[in-house]
Length: 128
Image (tube, rainbow, N blue to C red; front, side, top):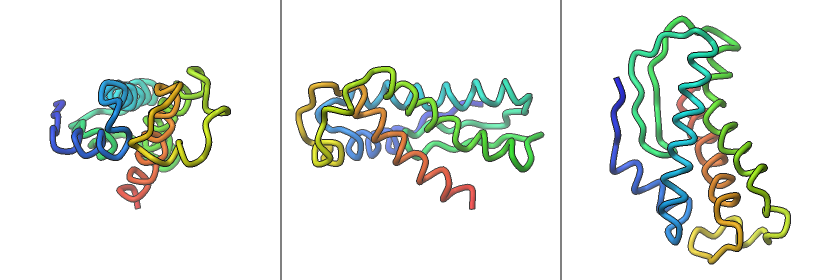
């Protein structure tokens, strides 16, 4: 079962990049697809996925130990890979990477990097 939490998506857009909501929604889709692909790859059973941007969660069975950790980091890893392929992070100052209201030259790369960091922190918090 797939559920979409609009409130979580809106909060994620505000945290990641209020100027570029379309890139933030794309980052949320990339995150969810990364989790779904990893669950298929690890042969787990998906009970429920709640897509709420960076606050997404999933109930998966038949995963244990290392596989659970791989599933936990799969969404942020997908965002990080897209961020690296999009390029442009090297030329952005640290202040612009942290500030979600700033105008960016390469918004896809920066938004995905922000989303990866926030999603990783929240996923690890949910795991432990």
